[in-house]
Amino acid sequence: MISKIRVPTEDGYAKLTLRKTHMPRKIDNYDLLVEAICKRAASDLIYGTYAQKTDAMDFFRSQWFEVLTGGELDGEYIIQQLLDGR
Image (cartoon, rainbow, N blue to C red; front, side):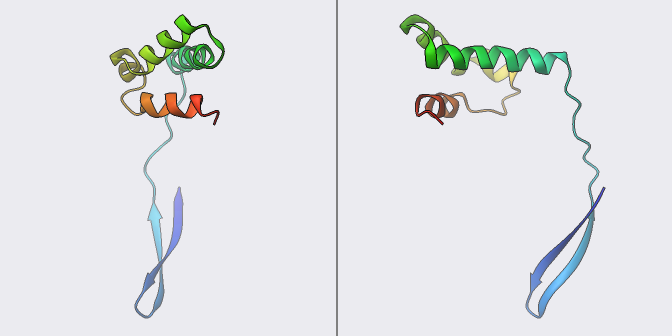
């Protein structure tokens, strides 16, 4: 895939062509399972009983969540967004 960009310079703009080598990762059954687990925890956090809500918060703050998501997501941020209704 080739992408063209314009970069500001002192004299105006320069046009650059970039070649992207990154191929999007294919979603597999593991990804779908992780998504389902996180959706369930989010649902428990929003609609669950007090015990379910605290369990969901513990999950989003846990090492299990970090391992499941590859450390790419911030569980505390997700908790705040869900509790704020966003």
